[in-house]
Length: 578
Ligand code: ISL
Ligand code: CA
Image (cartoon, rainbow, N blue to C red; front, side, top):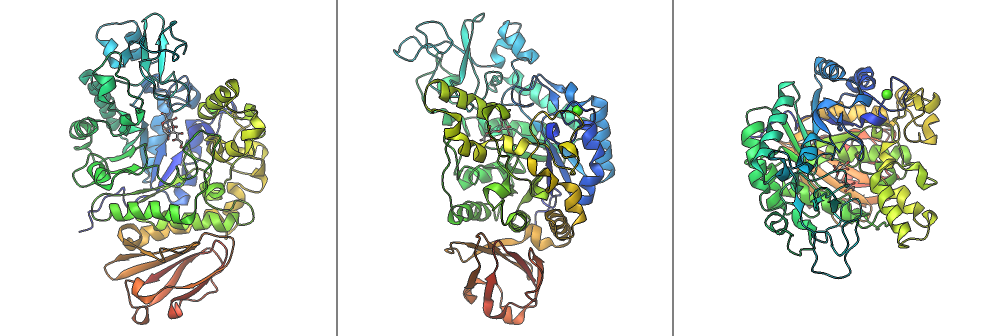
């Protein structure tokens, strides 16, 4: 029993509308711009579009600060545009999932405005708490004199996670920017509003939700039951908080259960226990699958100006733990990039000498692990990180706020000192415009783009990639269509090979007597190795091997004699055995 689902057999393409395609020359991508490209998406062969937030928003965090869940941001177009987009996608059998951002709203949302004004029952839609007066030396965070924020939590975007409101005379909680107050899920009225809003979108015909930081919605008791909160410095207790299962269970029973939807939860944190993971996405869990952060926290996780070294052992270890942990129950999401992460080829590959080879190797990984694969716009042409030269080139609060704070309090001396790390870590790497052609501004806009276009667009662009049969784009396209044809690629069991190798990641996928043998050389050097026969789940003497994917010329033959291999730099091979 394969426990089939359409969203397991699908490939997701993520669109960051602001940077995708601009049709009215204001330098900002828009929904008509996406409509212009639906045939492009169809040609690539993707099955689901995940659209980043397109709702009305003052854009303190590019749409993740929502002022109205039920209307479209003017810059992006109108509800009519959005409806046409849905229709055009559905006409091509492409599904659409929308971003659901319900851990917080914008401070310009009507609920927050009423909450501040203490109107009706709105005060308890958010967390308003008294500051602390019982401690020395922790005052002056834009609050009254001699008053400290309710607790010591730091926002994910730097500074305290509480903002003081003069009129109310209290502090409100914001785990992200101060323009993103956290909703109080303890309040049943809040949950009711959210569930109704979700049903409203489902009635419009969408196919699911990508749920933003959804495991943060239940806050720890120290905040929920105490005013001021008890002194608890561990804000990590907001992750997978005490009532998370109850809240998601209610959402499931009330909204998700009776609709055939893809429910994809973004879950912050690291090293999630596999039992917990299964409780979210297993047979009895409320969600279809989740995004975890284990691999994207390998090279950072501290301040944005720091980087950490990682090796293949770490990356392989993370994915293998999740592959094994959800093998019998649950389903993985396989992503190496999104709008919050640097470009995958710059981060996990070699974006210089082996850009094509490593980008195609990473694609091979994404499409041959067990789980739903994700393409973030631009990955399919091997777009790279941006060579930022000054702080003024950045647009993202998560980069700008912490760096300005650190410059202000002398934690760092200069931009130059942190330039290298910001170039590596900043979310803005993902947000530079999609490179469509070698025309001015990469064909993204006729106006002035809201963020710089990568200077390599003359070489790296969709038009050039589609014209070249050996391009990264054509490789993605081939892999997507192979996944449609071979069930073993979707449902096959994952088995690790060569678990101690420093540079080669090998594994098999097996289903009903069919196998894939995947070999990936994560290095700039040739690798020679053999695979011990006891590691293989088949007898290679009595089974036919066919090389069906390789990112070099197919000159290595179909055989796997004596299980002996020589892989060129960043070479990826997939054999099909049956
Ligand atoms: O962890 C991060 C990067 O490695 C953070 O950038 C990010 O804030 C975190 O992943 C949560 O992301 C989501 O919620 C944020 C929003 O800024 C992100 O764009 C969104 O994907 C707040 O809504
Ligand atoms: Ca526009």
